[in-house]
Image (cartoon, rainbow, N blue to C red; front, side):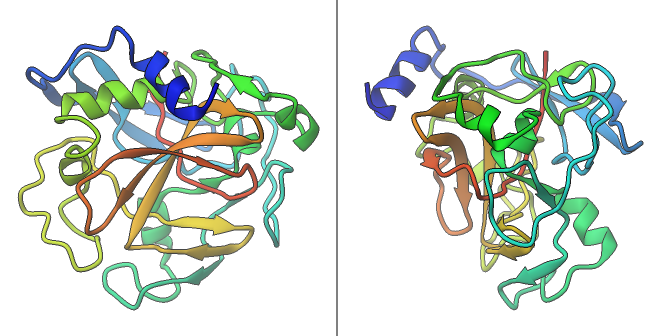
Length: 248
């Protein structure tokens, strides 16, 4: 079965777009590092309003209390980056070496093993066909890593994959894009991605990790600055991406 067929199966039973009820400020939660996040309601789904920015697993996670390491280069071993080095577009507001406030706003980037809370690359690589809706990983207690189908539901809420990327963005920070029309409370920031400690494409795109794997790849959702799409993608497990958590 290829990835397109896999995503088609996940989409079965998903309601088509009719209306999208949004409510910001539903509640707040704290992660294991003490960071606070608002929870927003989007048509029955409850998402954290920001990307995760913590290097420690919460008390109910599969790796409770463990600290995630950084890495100098890309690897399948669990790692995260907080933008120690940046290779970036020369645009504002995310230009050059990032300030602590900018790093906090963007959240950390994690490879799949770290995001999912696997103890090693070997454990992560043994997951070749995964649809795990309850894996907490790096998320705070009460939340989990979204599945490919969670992102499909979110996308359909905003008019499906060819349109939803246009309104899921934040109003500022995207390279050369006027996002004054954005109405989403999801507020996706252009956090880019990282190969070990080197971060790239900040200001230009963002990629959200899902809990789903297909053979040697994982499934992410991608938004690009000048595009309107919010598309699924299959990528390797060594690159670090953003994590946006959903309520269990």
